[in-house]
Image 1: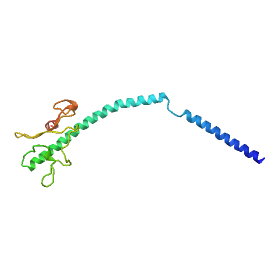
Image 2: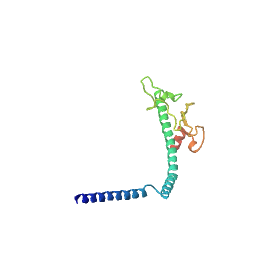
Image 3: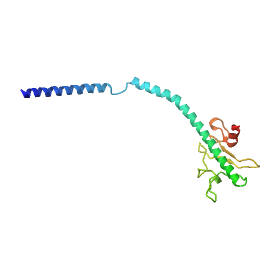
Image 4: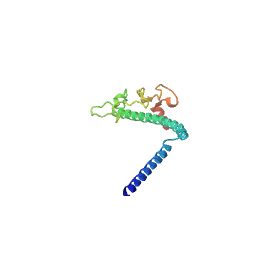
Length: 165
């Protein structure tokens, strides 16, 4: 009699385990993935977000590149002025002298071992002083060519000074 009771308990326990496992599997299968409609909604939302975000990011990148060029030109101009002060009012003939250590190991362009390029990886153009004028430092903008408008506009120390006035 004891063995029949134990056997019945075992069968009931196995049956409930099997039943709960099959219900669990069915429930998991019905929740396994996303429907096509849900995926399409997510894709449309991501597309809408991208149409607003990407143009703003590109505008900010362009703004940052122009500001970096202005900051570099201002640093170069300050180094040129310091050079002129320490050399009896004589301006340098090229920008390379600003990063060349003097007899005391000092350079005029602090924090640089070489003359920096502009944000578009073009070298800054240096026009030495002539006839009592001050030197001109130019970045030709994104296109690297003289002239231009918008992103391709030239940036130089003279126009920066005129903009401040």
